Image (cartoon, rainbow over all chains, first blue to last red; front, side, top):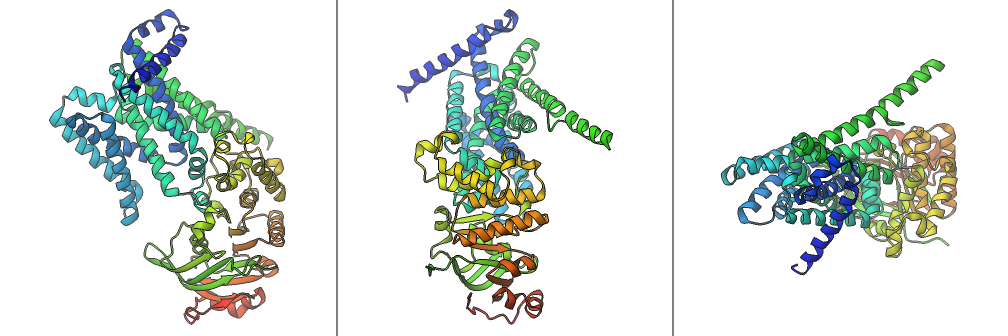
Length: 310
Length: 262
């Protein structure tokens, strides 16, 4: 691990340098804050988080997993607290409780008469409550606020490294398992009939989702990460009828909202997590109105023309 | 030459959904290369029989063999193509007709060399592309290949689903209500396509409510109402007397009785 660290830091420096080349094209007053190292770290983290959230949100939206995303994101809180208590990286604790909760939801759903939405609500509120209680005992309320709502300006290099690693893992997994994931999202029954191990795909996708949520924790926080897991995918779904195009648009929306949101939050001096989500929501609103086939304007125009012909 | 291994063989097969028995004591054997229609009232377990084959339902008791082996191994080998009911598909999914049909090849793609699975499909094994185009031609949907699936009519949707099953070029075709809710031209086209598949030596097993087509096209008819009510030629099974027995269920149905199709 120790030999890898200079290499990883080098990768981060290279990526930062690339980003700064783009930033330096911006007008002076926008580019100025990014002279600072912490701003550069914040920018790189935002780009990475916007990209992987955008990627995963396509699966979340198409698979109707919005509530599950919400559940997992809340369920990582006790893991974060326990990891803090034991001096572990946040990452590990969050991953463990996120995964345990999704397994618990599956178990309740399968073995009792409780339906899935109730099972999710039950599990994630319980886990979230546990996290709040533990944190109230061991940390300050500022700390809690940062976990809940993100603190992208305070991202440390170690957290950035973990985000980078998580992004690479997510990207690699989606590339290697592109077809099984697509088929499972589109038509799980067909995936089963073709002999795919749908259980493994299901839990693999949940693991990816957990990984993404944990990686986004410091940027947008637990509460708002679910927005980044729904809004980019939903926006892209309105704009295209091709899955690969949807992935690309969704990543673009995720990255754009993260970067623009970060810049706005700095220049307006408001909360960064909230600003990032608001930018994403605005992009969704634009798509909702103006999407070429599935937008409201296009729909009404088509209806109006049909009526005019009749 | 006829392969003596049955396409589907069930012995004392039972299945349940949430403690509710849907299939009880089914013993039967379907030969390869024939067209079998499965007929029965709603909720009689017809689809459940197919679900046991594709693995979305696990048997409670009894044994099921496909081409002499376990269903799981035959699924992995790509020998089972399945066409679901239309309602089970996500028609809003952002995918074109051609890519939908291509998903039928995904099982076979696992046997491609690793590098081919990681590159865009135009560089990969051309046999997949050819199978997809042939299947689209077979159901007369080649002109619609680039359309999103959500923009199709009901009959067209069914034809695309059939094309996906055909593209797999599997030895056994399982079809759940392939004729439900289709327009007459699409129905004729689907039946003609299935006739062609049977003459190519494939086994066709379809769940249907459509008695006239079963009478004309099927080699065997299975009457199922939780238990196996009867099995035989369409003329025997679709008589008024047998259909009346089917409607009331069959308490007197031979428990474990074996009938092998002619």
